Image 1: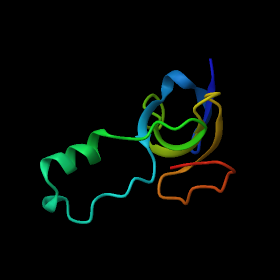
Image 2: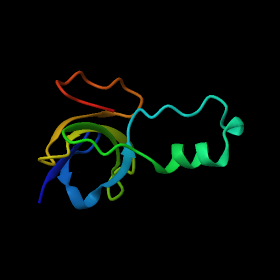
Image 3: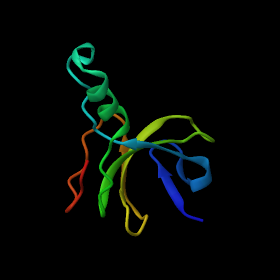
Image 4: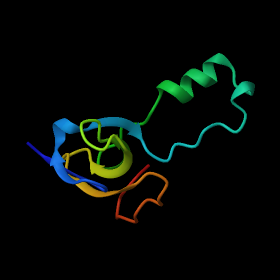
Length: 96
């Protein structure tokens, strides 16, 4: 079992958390102007890169707060965790 370091509660078992998709995704400036195809692409299509990626996580079985993490998709290792709204830490090779 892997431990995930919640910014508010500290290290907890991974079963207490839920993945919330990529972090730092810019919302469209005028969503009403998007076609159905453009909106579907924004909502459902995401890159699936190999290596460090910034993601959103929720501590569902603890404080229930959202936070961001940089996780390596190859090793599943968490490289950094930080509160939602905080800038992404600079890590070599990290992607959004």
